[in-house]
Amino acid sequence: MSFAHRPAGIADATPISAAERQLRVDLAAAYRLIALYGWDDLIYTHVSAAVPGEPGRFLINPFGLAFDEVRASNLVKIDTEGRIVGNSEHPVNATGFALHAAVHLARADAVCVMHLHNTAGIAVSIQRDGLLPASQHALRFYGHLAWHDYEGLAFTPAEGARLTASLGDKPAMLLRNHGTLTTGRTVAEAWVLMATLIKACEIQLQAQAGGVPLVMPPPEVCARTATQWYDGGAIEGELEWPALLRKLDRLDPSYRD
Image (cartoon, rainbow, N blue to C red; front, side, top):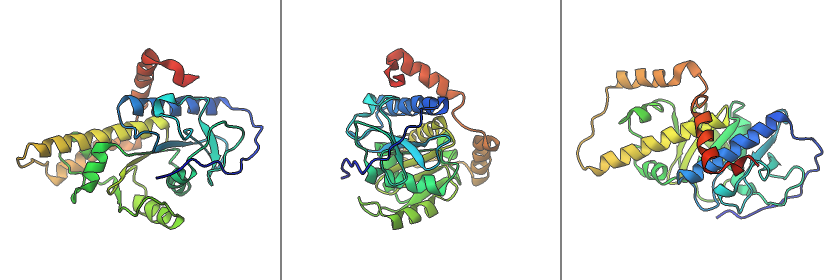
């Protein structure tokens, strides 16, 4: 299990830009939505986001807080080594961030990296054949889903290289026996991709629970549907995200603080 870590901090007098402020609101919202949908795992797992205009710096949750306690103001800024930038009363899980750092460094398009231990994703990752093309939601990932074999709790630089090689240019990954991972050009994109992946896993598990043979679309239909989902590379989440923020605002707008 990972532990709180407060490595030597880095002084920083850079004021928070409007772009960083918006990113903080979106990232805090992602944590609150994860808690709302029941995808959290006590205080573990992370969603990280690259700070605009500050290469090599990222925002991450304060380690030790539940996801429904995350606010825009208590997100912690760190560098690629997990060192805190500026002042923060909260520690970070630097070892947990190592997986995220590897993906951020390998993928310039991975502005947001989301890694969860949601039950349905882990259950499907354990299955030999993984995610089946059994639902419309699953077909979003047809030909666009990576896999990484389980290597234990400790995440090393060597595993980071193997994981990013496994991920390649794909937007999503199932980590065997471990969980789910999505990347996004925005926080909204990473969140919506995760929501789609989790629902695909839930549908598969419920269908399998019926104990009868499953009907799969033919490969040519799967490929065509995946292309339709991809929509020419459009950024996903642009329409869904404002609606999700309105949901949070109705329930508890304190994530914006």
